[in-house]
Length: 288
Image (cartoon, rainbow, N blue to C red; front, side, top):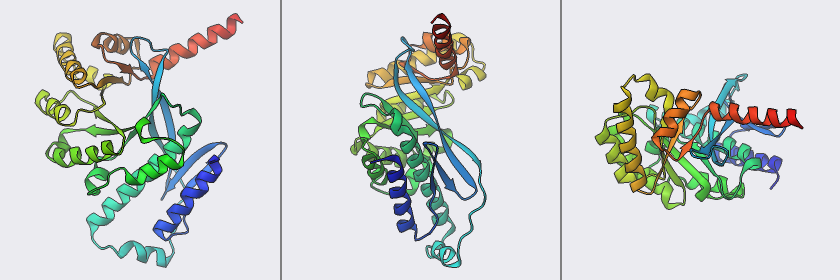
């Protein structure tokens, strides 16, 4: 299905499901944008490369970029439909879920031109979305993926893990397991080296396909090198023993690249590799 037809299809679906005339997807110059209230949603893709061979790209991570958008005003009947389901928590979770679904639909549509059968797309899901949905996690988004002609097997659901969600780990694991049953791959994202016990327990219970760490955040913790490498090697062994792959994110300078290389993680992502690749392309062009 052509991109403009897909945008029309999903706008029609949104209009039908939410009983609103507001159509959130916009196609401009071959790119899809999402409109959510006063927020304009855009997609920014970043290659995930092999650590030992950064020229080889195994997939892409996608991040949300937002900009201000002129306010959209609702009619009275639309506002009434929003209040039919009373309760502040209900409306809060509905808003989170609707926003999360819209963001991932925008990302999936923008991913189509670069999609390949041997590559994967990493999509973050808001933990509140997982907690707000009680069953059939991933069913709604599976229809989006299939309508785009893609498969859940090449889609990685990423959960950012923090201490705040530790006591909800059982519900989060149950939700992520539902995604896996539908064919999705699972990734855990840690921005800090949390307590070994919590991290290892979560990896043991969920056996994620990927575990990612932020180089920038690890470096900012000012741990001594020996302590950092000991933790990283222990974590990498835990991941590989469970058939998973480790990812270094935010590799933006040579120092970070050295840390990533010596950690023996499987995949890397960051501006450092993009600059190197662009420099090589520039030199090749100059030689020609």
